[in-house]
Length: 320
Ligand SMILES: NC(=O)N[C@H](N)C(=O)O
Ligand SMILES: [Mn+2]
Image (cartoon, rainbow, N blue to C red; front, side):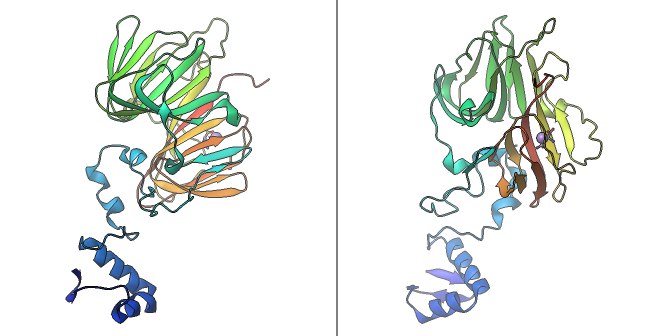
């Protein structure tokens, strides 16, 4: 039996005239009916009017929407063939319903989804690593540097000198090329990983870095209103940086950027509109974006909560 206010409807057949009257006469009322029916627990159609979606966010762990996106396939009733993902010559949007996980080469008990690879035109890879119970990382190929950022769970990082660090959500590590290390998890954990062949400069060397976003200072952003943190040193030794950019709802990039640098982006929190070239995309936490050099790019944060994204950017090298 489904309950609608004081109205109790026994054997609520979809062919009953009351049902048709309510459902077809006013779209608003029909939304209300569907909500009431699904909340009663008897009718099983998933509600697309889920007002709880954001209201209980405060009780959830940090970045939980990356692994539990609002518009998951179940919210879209798993529409056959539906995806927001887009693949174009100078950008790509890769949304969670198109992630394809398979065992990561050299890692144990870990599934990976490569979201950006050189096949798309990038000089770096960006992937999600879903570590399971008793899992362990493999090493990147020789001369490749690695950056890991924890979006769910926790991992233990150990390097060749025996230094051990526990990395929890919002923590990260940079591992210089050819540095022997392991990342281990004894329970489920999700990492976003960036790797690229290091572009060395004479007399400059990088070092292992371990940190957490909330310990990084806010940096000046002249002409912009978003909040910016950089997770790596800005010194010449580092050939890329990872930016954490925060926008309150309604805030947007002032510069309609076009630049030589490449980007790999993961939206950690919030919702908004990303402009890439001549296309405008609604995006939400969990979405990943590839931006080729010179693709026009712009973001406006919408929704009710802060937008935060993590952004790979190659820096400090002459593009020639
Ligand atoms: N798309 C971006 O957010 N780009 C950055 N503002 C950047 O290039 O630093
Ligand atoms: Mn940019």
